[in-house]
Length: 115
Length: 111
View 1 (cartoon, each protein chain N blue to C red):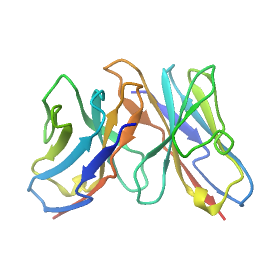
View 2 (view 1 turned 60 degrees about the vertical axis):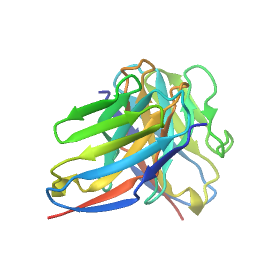
View 3 (view 1 turned 90 degrees about the horizontal axis):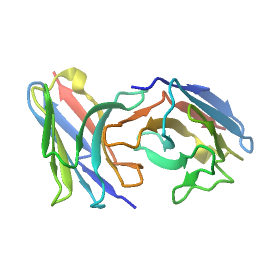
C-alpha cells in the first residue's frame, strides 16, 4: 500500500483565515481524494483532485471554499478558505488506483479547529 | 450519485460472539465494496473488500458477503475480541472510481 503523509497534523485557526493542507504520497497514484470527517460522523467526499486539471467537487462543496491543487501524481493540497467554526473537522486525503485491484488508502488526517 | 446505508449504528456483543454489519447501495454500476475499521483518533484502515464478481470473501475471523441483485453487502466478524471494538465503515466505489461511505457502526465487544 502507498505511504501517505499530511501536513499539518492539526491546527487551531481563527475564523476568517485560510489553511492549506498538504498531502504527499510515496508513489505515483491515479486518483487522489479529499474527505471531511466531522466528529462522530462518517467520511464525506469533498472532491476528486485531478492531475493537470480542476478538481471535481461533490454536491455541497465549491471551489471558492475548498480550492484544490494537484501539480503532479504524488502531491495535492486542499485549502479551507474563510474559515468558520463549522469547518472544524478532520480532513483526510486518500489515494486509489482505477483498476479493479486498486484499493483506497487514507492519510493520517488533519484535525482542524476554528475558533 | 451513489447512496450507501449502513446498519446498525451501534452494536454491542459479548466477547466470543459474532457481529454482523449490513450495508445497502443504490448504484447498480458500483463494482467494489471495501470495509474500513477506524479506531479512535486514527485513520480508517482497510480490513477486507469484495469485488462485484465475487459473492463471498473470508480472511480469518472476518468475512464479507455481497448480493448484487439485492444491492447489499455484509461484514461478519466471528469470535469477537475486545480489540475488535472500533467504528466500522462500509463503502462502495462507483464507475467514476469515487468512494461513498456508509454512516458507520460503532462496535463494542464486552470482555
